[in-house]
Length: 186
Image (cartoon, rainbow, N blue to C red; front, top):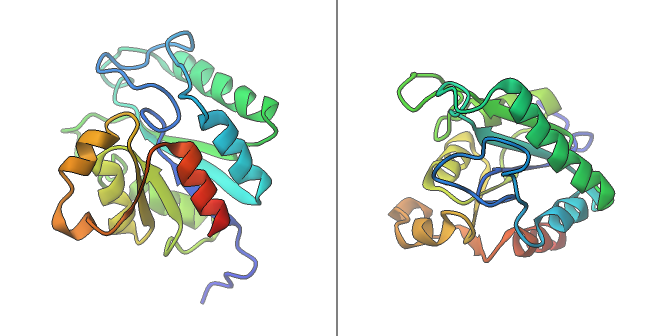
């Protein structure tokens, strides 16, 4: 049995469409990576409230050779530096580099990245908030036993209109700032 009293309070965030503007053309460089209004402060508020913040992101642009590992590292460095400047900290960013047809276990809606985070932090995923904007984020959270939370940014408004019956009762917020405030308050 896991001693949850000593386990960190974990929150998992999707990246594109939740933290930063998304693009159908993929975010390929740090210059193209633009944070959504309020998202950096929201991450900082989670961190200040004692949450360990992790990001789990599908990044098939690597496999598609739209950008390389160095470009992805530069994007994540920019993200982390902005959060630190805002007074917070992102503990870990985990990505799935595989394409939709690669058959991996990490690409959301599969649970691999979330299970890895839960295992690495020694945290059972039950009730761990996982904030996303796409159906695959919500499905991964639900399948892993985490608490799926939808934001209306990115693909979120579309996703909200097309939620399957099993996800109709999830929490939905306008953006990461509103979701973070609710998570901290909870």
